[in-house]
Image (cartoon, rainbow, N blue to C red; front, top):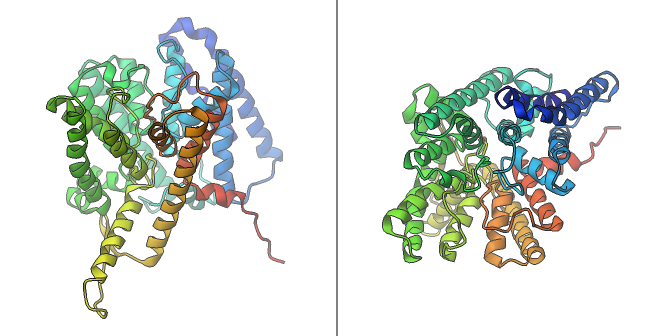
Length: 458
């Protein structure tokens, strides 16, 4: 992992031949990359193996985040915490930033986007594309990938990597066709697929003021927030099985309900009907997919519209995708269980009510174990969200709605901002958001498992 994460820092150097004036920046990436590769080779030879899979996943993420912060720090004009924040925001595919992207060189703009592209796949997934370990299946699941698409983990990783690469190519081509510069197309495609949201424009997608570009971005965000196993069904042309998925139906229902409501709030707040519909469609998908691309400022939005956005960010995207949040599958399971419990109150005591959950091709009975997992995770998530909101509101001096919006964006790895996060944000607020981003990306319990001591049998 240390060797692999060192190699990641070599990739931004491919931009330098196209922008030769930035050649002097090569050393900023070469030094930490070479040191990491050498350290990794040394550990391979003399180090001790980490037995706990969750501990290895957490180590990989923390080491990668610290390593990726070094180029930001060497570039200058940022504090160590700001450099760490940018690295965490990249690898966790959040998209919040404290940098002025209009002043960054192309090498760093590409670097930020590539961090999100790798972070969307995950370090373990990226490793499995090249190297197979004996505990690959355990590591694969420990990083938050619940589905195995092919009989072997290696083949699964390669299928996912191929799909990811294919969509990167297609997205770049379509962005370029509809007027986006080629470099911008590569950056925005990587960040849309990873549901990351980093942009090389201060106004994000709103900079282009183009309906076709917004439509392409919505499609890429939907691809990024869709479970990899469901994407494979689309690849195989099994559209009927894809549409049967409870997760996709729940996503469709959420969009049908929330977009008109959000549009109505925006119209009441002063937008025209056309503006309200266009803004609500794009920004609702951006929040629900946890991508974080924006087409406007949220400072003039009514609080009712912001509340809808907060709810969508908390729900999040597909389980096993690059998205954050509680996840559609868990919320869908909890809603199905709620409906079943309500129905129980209205039928005779001896009536047996069966509730099913569709996972594409599989139709399975909803069991207590699934409900318990979903409710436990959702409960922990909400508690962390409340605590983080209170702390961020207190230390930043913002309003409760602003604090709730910003921390929902951090914990959900979304990246939308109402103005709380910027280059002047205090260190304590950045640290609060960093904790939220890490917990949201690693899904809380992976970190708990990593901290748990192994019990050795006597």
